Amino acid sequence: MKKIFGIAILATLLACNQAEKNATGDKDTSQNNAAKVSNEVKINDVKKSEILNQYVDLKNALVASDSAVGQKTAKALEKSLANYAGCEPTAEIAAKIAGVNDLAIQRKNFTVLSADIIALFKSTEIESGTLYVQHCPMANKGDGGDWLSKEKEIKNPYYGNQMLECGRVAEEITSK
Image (cartoon, rainbow, N blue to C red; front, side, top):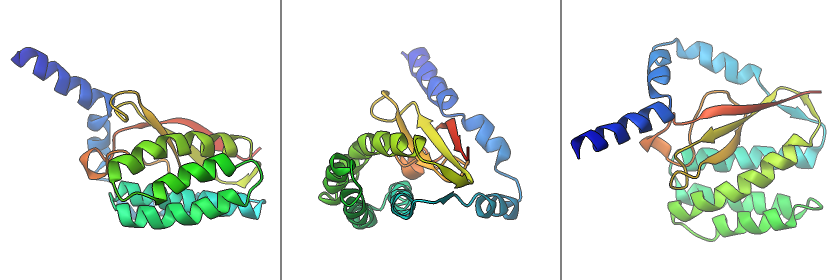
């Protein structure tokens, strides 16, 4: 039994790349801040740019495990999505997140929302910068979950501080 438990713990750590992340934890943070500033994503479509910024605000609220801010940002995102032709079903998902203060339910709906948002931005012309499609294999009880980020650094919205760095960059969306 101890052997199985040990293997499960080892698999979890390997899946989340904890060893790699811990090795990079001692770097100068000013260098990380410079990288974040230099990756400003510019999109010509003002409505899509607003959707992206609101989505990132929602992701950051989930990273911080703040369900109240998650509700507020999801409500703003819902309005923006409802006003963008073809995104009405995605707006309904954002409304589900805005309608509950249970973090687990918000994160579950965030999985579906993220799939739609990622698809939207894969077909968007990005003027400059890079968007990162990130993946956590542990999210949703092992089914995995993706999200979109403006930073390459992993900050997991599915687990927050419990497993902040669990995940990897699965794809990069860049200017064409």
